[in-house]
Amino acid sequence: MQNESGEGKGCRRVLFTVHLIVNDKKRLPAKFFQQESGNEPVREWLLDLDAENRRLIGNDVMTAEFGWPVGMPLCRPMGGGLFEVRTDLPDKKIARVLFCSHKGDMVLLHGFIKKTQKTPKADLDLAKKRMRGLK
Image (tube, rainbow, N blue to C red; front, side, top):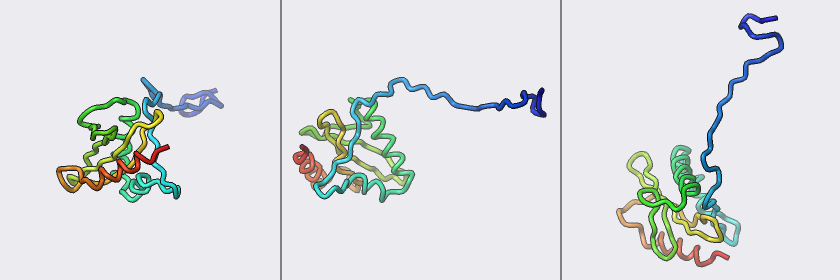
């Protein structure tokens, strides 16, 4: 017996989407750097940003996780094992997430919004200090 929509009684039309995942294995899974106090500075920084900026930065980090090694324009080596994920944000803002590879993970060490052409020395020094403290 058919109902008004032409479907059999007791049958439902199910709509679904199939997502094709070409390579579902992260080559360099991202982890947040954690201070001895338990704070995760990059996670906290991201949560202070608006949702759209978080989404854009997250997409770029995810691209690096699945596609590592990734070169310019997404990732750039900063020297000494330190790299940056480069994200262009709306309103001409530029975000950077500094990270290193440690024990098979991408450790997100420091995030900031660039205000000058050159990456500030204080931001690089902070990321390097955190990198040296990894166990």
